[in-house]
Length: 93
Image 1: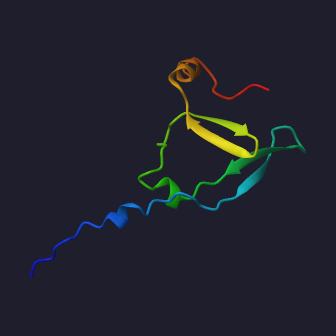
Image 2 (image 1 turned 90 degrees about the vertical axis):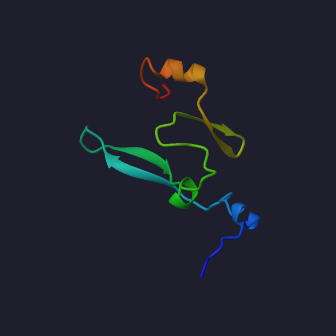
């Protein structure tokens, strides 16, 4: 008995385009006694990040900006990558 796979174009369209997640703030003790620092996080479920259409890979340097009520995440441009190689990539206040 021979099993034959049939090409299913609908199967290719089942990519994750939208997913519900949570914004969380972890509170961790700071080095100075009695103080805490906040570590804001946005969790990206593996169902989203493991999808073949997810545009980023582990280790990619990303730029993030707020545009009205949207958070926009993009891969950093080469000019920014050259600057980041010389030092800290965190934005100074």
